[in-house]
Amino acid sequence: MLDICLLGTGGMQPLPYRWLTSMMARCDGSNLLIDCGEGTQVALKEKGWSPKPVDVMLFTHYHADHISGLPGFLLTMGNAERTEPVLLVGPRGLERVVNALRMIAPELPFELRFYELSEPREQIKVGPYVIDAFRVNHNVVCYGYKISIPRNGKFDVERAKAQEIPQKFWSRLQKGETIEFEGRTLTPDMVLGEKRRGLSVTYSTDTRPVPVIAEYAKDCDLFICEGMYGEKDKVSKAREYKHMTFQEAAKLGKEAEPREMWLTHYSPSLMRPEEYLNEVREIFPRIKTARDGWSMELGFDED
Image (cartoon, rainbow, N blue to C red; front, side, top):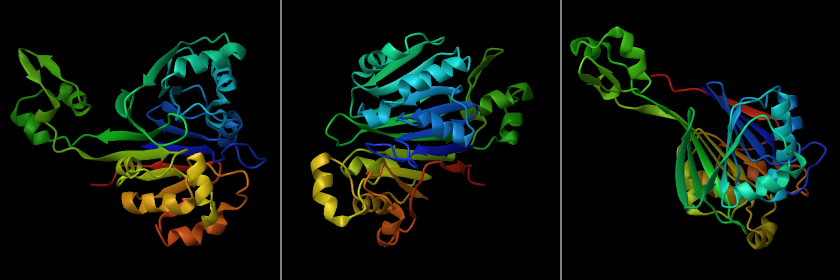
């Protein structure tokens, strides 16, 4: 199971009812945060979720509305008695940026580990998460992320018995372990069927519409995409500042065909995003204008 909460949906400037960009995922007791804009702590408190289990933080880029909430967030994690290391992932320069921000949060009871992205596409695995990072098109180096929870094939009891595999190893093999036992190498493929559909969420913001976004959002459970401007006549402004309109985002949704799509990262001037919803649903029907605090519980398909 994968829980998703969109903590902040604002771009550039926080508003009384809209915090800046942030999203959290929870799976198997491990939390993952994407971006940490101003107000992330408040939104998390309102949701009733804790910052303590955050094991990995992903940053799309280093504009203030995506990272300005980090020093306070780290201090709150420390005050919650976090001691385990935290992995931070982002474009080149991450360690330098974070250390500069830590001038106001110098002492932490846990280690920060850094992974700086340098290639157009990279994949890393952290806890239950498979994280795909892909470079998008903003006016600074910026990445989108796909978060996946893989699912192994069904355990075949009859195959396990036929190969005289002791029952005490069944659960370990089902989890993907390889086991050495009495001169034999027991591997998961000896007892598992074909891999089944897992869970996936694609998150992309601060970018022009580029094909790689739809590629990674293809058939995912949830596609969270920036919609900076609802008005069609702001497309030239979107081009100038390397952002997207609702219409452009909806076209990516139509190409990717996710099960559901949420728009986020609204301009401060966009007071009522829902006013443009019917128009963009003509392009992609499963699109929604998200609000702060929206959450979704994703579960595996029934076989």
